[in-house]
Length: 197
Image (cartoon, rainbow, N blue to C red; front, side, top):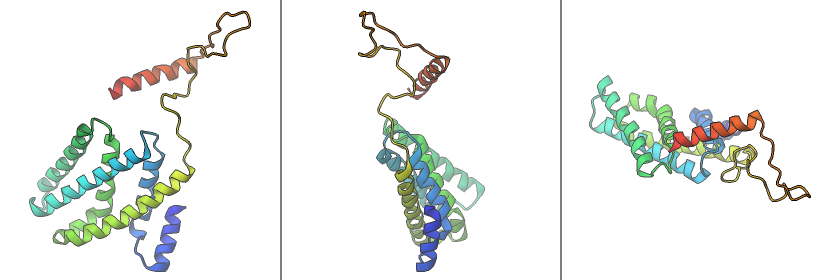
């Protein structure tokens, strides 16, 4: 709905936001809805990836030939920048957010850049502001309807440790019964924790 509203308002006010309304709105919603770290961290990673892609376009326009080899070097540079940002932040900025920011600018700007590489300074700013506005609208719209985040350490399955109120009147502690779904969730949680280390 946010993208529809952007298109209608943009058309009425001649803002020219329509070209990336769906792309920006969808990417903003993804940043808002993925339950990984805080929204500010996700936005920071997105912005860092966006800047990395911009650097790639600057290098491509200024230093690299407009050939398949030049484009390949630029892509490699941008991916290395994204990985470097994640490594430098010690994984505080997740790699997926930096790659998403890179994909956002690349998807919105590639055809415009290819048509006129020397006009990078003006066309990239125009595309970036249009895209970032749409990302912000998508982020805010999705954040309003996003489910509330679970507390740190919440995994969706019952803890195997007894709670304070789990004792019978006789004083014998009662342990909760584990179901097969609980053990499957626990195994998946353990596997995911190993992969993130």
